[in-house]
Image (cartoon, rainbow, N blue to C red; front, side):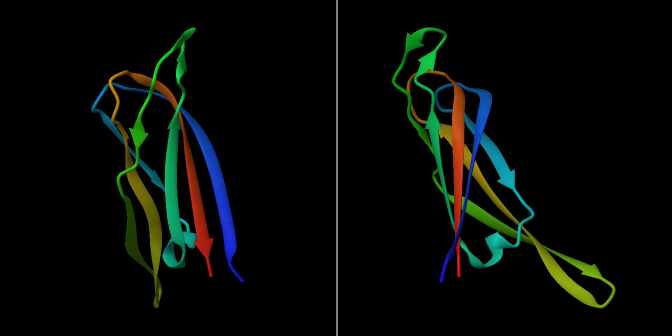
Length: 103
């Protein structure tokens, strides 16, 4: 039976058209054996005006950093990705949703 972990965070960060913002989550053992999916959604309402917004997460990077405690070696595992403004308008608010499906 699979285990599903889901988390949403809201960000206030200015992304001009074409800009990217690197985010990294972890360390978390769920990233070792699970399928990690990330999506973002930009707020289309900015200071009383409505704009079309396009935001993307082109790929997710899983980074394992080994560490040793005595004779035991383990990994700290992180999920990292760029949030990219692909539209023509500046993005000031967006949400990030991370889902991990583990065996």
